[in-house]
Length: 249
Image (cartoon, rainbow, N blue to C red; front, side, top):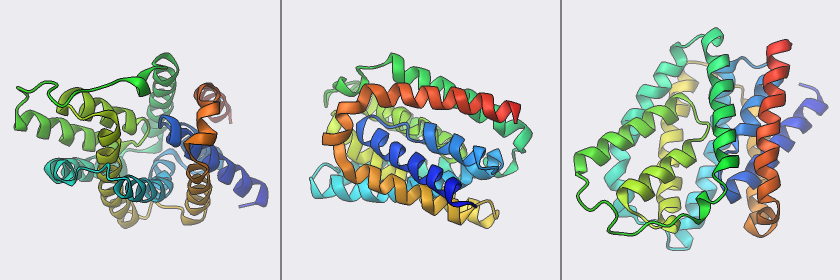
């Protein structure tokens, strides 16, 4: 890859790290960037997990140090999440680029629109006694399905996790983010193992995106929050432009 291409990938990772510090959705930037570098849709979907892995390790460490990871909740939801992730990642290895590419673009555009429309999502609150009658089996099924989606396609997964952990499990936003980070770390490890076994990972571009995303995340919320609204619109614009470029290349 040329230095220009590597710089574009690093820049996409930087923006993704800033986005994830604010509201998530970093894959809206990095996944199209990898595809525009000539990596097939299925392999780009796999390679993008390298950057996700770096981000989730960093995020989980930060939440743990802040005492915001209720590990009993992580243990409670870990097994169904990992099982779902394994099945989803395996399915992703079986889908050809002709199917994966339009599917990825459709999902990215949908998630981008949701992020722009639901501007107040990060301010949503949950109470510990929300949905107290929810059964354990229902939560396990929900986490299994969430893991299935995450193993298959990463885009927008953080939003799905937060919706489940806050709206169904009943965690407050801070602890929901802590549990989300820990579950994502395990989920991504499973998916990476399956994609590596299927020889679908492009390590050089993946590590470049990962480095950029870690730097972006390190800049922190204090920097990113000022650009939160712009980052949402930037993500949607990038996805639309990428869709046009990919479809006409």
